[in-house]
Length: 248
Ligand code: 13P
Image 1 (cartoon, helix red, strand yellow):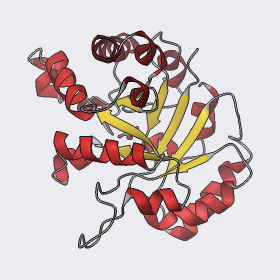
Image 2: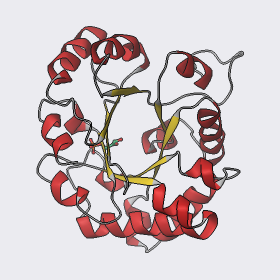
Image 3: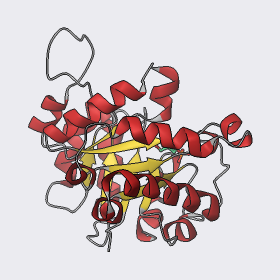
Image 4: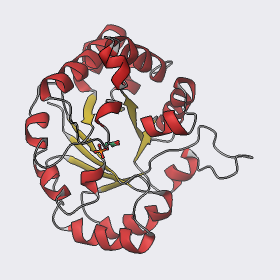
């Protein structure tokens, strides 16, 4: 039985002051052990939000990292740094980073390997665009993204990663995938992992759905056979995030 993961992605929202206030507000409301609750915050909010959630079940993650440990990479943050701060999760390869910040399948793979090396669980994002879905290329896109992201991982490494299926057309658009569409895509991803890494990796790996999930759609999505929780954007920076977590 896979434990569900409900991960919030705050994206570029909340000043440090506001972040602390909102975390305080969420602290008691979402302190459950029934699912793994992760809140991925901007780097500048990591320490203060960690402090607020200290002693609770809520984990604080990052939204990106560099694949080198240190060096001349102005403006970057490494997995070594995040590991030293006790950050247990990091989002890798979000479509906003792929589309706007030149993230490639190769850098996503390097970051995944590096996160695992530092004991950080990568939440690897994959997903097709509207054009790709409309032209029937969804499975090809997912096959390629998964193959690249998991290159050089062992079957046991794969049990430690979390995959987030986030169709680009559903992100921030209010157009949520149907539970059937989302489940089919997650099952397809699990099938790819089964082919390459075998029974145990496919049975253990947690695959989330992300894209316009709200407290109104979470229940049905999270009850599907191959959906092990959600990666939540807009609905994670409002008080009703509490409800989304409790549908997990
Ligand atoms: P929304 O929930 O705002 O659509 O964002 C989803 C997402 O990108 C989470 O990473």
